[in-house]
Amino acid sequence: MRHLVTLLLFVGAIAAYIAGSTLGAAALVVVGLVLESVAWYRILRGKKHRPVSTH
Image (cartoon, rainbow, N blue to C red; front, side, top):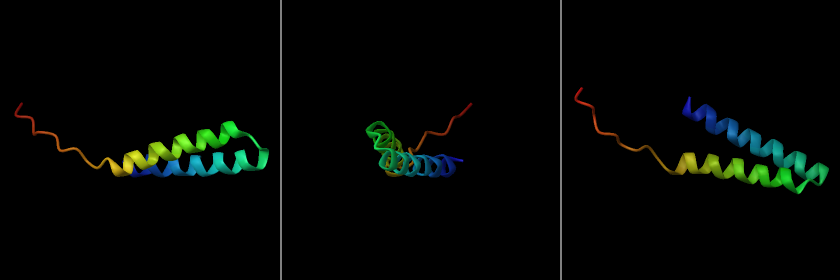
């Protein structure tokens, strides 16, 4: 599920870049930049090791 969300973020970023470049809409390019940044953050942050619960 985690990989699917990251993939969808990249797809959304590409779509926003394409729409922004063809329409000349800077706001869509910014949206693409934000979506791509979130996707890279999800990839590069790695998995955090959580302590095992004893409950």
